[in-house]
Length: 295
Image (cartoon, rainbow, N blue to C red):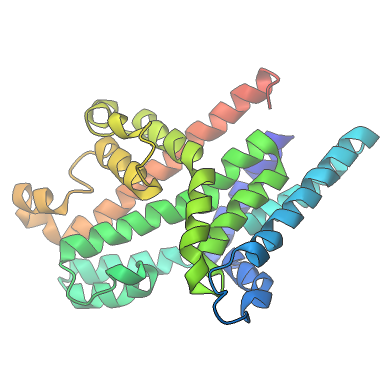
């Protein structure tokens, strides 16, 4: 039932993302409202935020354990389906990327930046960004965002159940949405621990779902690096797994200068296709684990 529940939730969530409904980020923002006020000098404290995530995760783990012990485990799968719908999802990306690609194809780089600037990291929103830097920043944000909102949840759901999936996603939500900005870098370091294994598993999957030869020459050295960040690992692996210089705009413009207007849309399409193929690899892997009786 783990595979069926996750697969149904993933398919429904993809449809919801296309239509832009049910944003999990809005729910996290509402859940973290109690952290908006704090004592002066204690803005970087983590306790209140961790309680908001850890306590519900423990309650979910206890609920699953009690259901197993009482023979009512199947009754919890509808609840897990609903929770997965809320934990996963990245609505709003499709219209943003469509507008960006259209502006890029017209050569309107200022317009392209205007469409995506709010989605870029705060330190990378400068209007003076070159087209190459802007595009790579957008690609990095897209890859990491979809990893955190799909693959991270999938990994911990299969490994440890809905409780661990909630905990891992909640840590990411804290680094993005906790009202006290001073605490977010500390939450990000904790979230990095939850990201470490699934990020490297996804980086490995890129090699299976993409160009294995290019991936071997580009990304394998980073897989077990203890200091490489999630975005570094995923972007390096994606760059190696993608062909046609999809993540190398400078090289693409040199080799295919006549096709430069179509680069933005083509690159983003290649990334999304790689992520979709990687999720299919994960679903097949989960199915094998179920058949083997592991999951």
